[in-house]
Amino acid sequence: MPRVVHFEFSAEDPKRAVRFYRDVFGWTFAKWEGPLEYWLITTGPDGEPGINGGVGRRTEPGEGTVNTVAVSDIDDALTRVTRGGGEVTQPKHAIPGVGWQAYCRDPEGNVFGIHQADATAR
Image 1 (tube, rainbow, N blue to C red):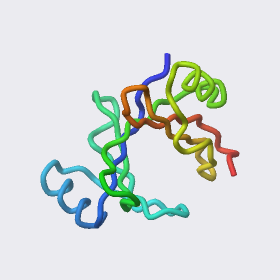
Image 2 (image 1 turned 180 degrees about the vertical axis):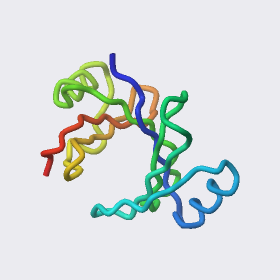
Image 3 (image 1 turned 120 degrees about the horizontal axis):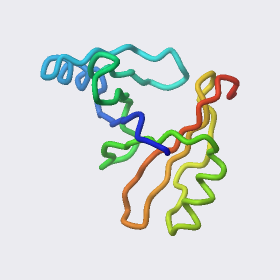
Image 4 (image 1 turned 45 degrees about the vertical axis):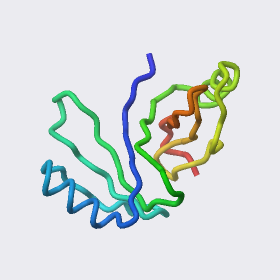
C-alpha cells in the first residue's frame, strides 16, 4: 500500500529555515548536491516513527507543506489521480539518480507528490 515517505516545504530564505528548525527541533540538514537548491531534513533516528523531508527555495507565494507518497508505478498512479477527479500540476520528471517525481492536486485542492524510486532516472 502506498505510504507518505517524505515531506517538503519551501522558504523565502532556506538557510534561515534550516537554522530555525535545527534550533527548535534539533533536526539535521544536509545540502543536496543535485540541480536544485535543496536541503534534506533528518527529523529523527531510523527505526523510530516519523518521516524525513526537505526544504527548498519558494518559487510561488503561498506554497505550503507537500507530502509525497511512494508508488511502484508512477504512470499508473497519475492515471488514477486524473480518473479520481484530481489533476497533475507538475508532470512526471526525473530526479537524477533518485527516481521519478510528479505533483498533483486532489479534488479538495490539496497538493501532494508522487514518487517512484529509480536509481537510473535521468
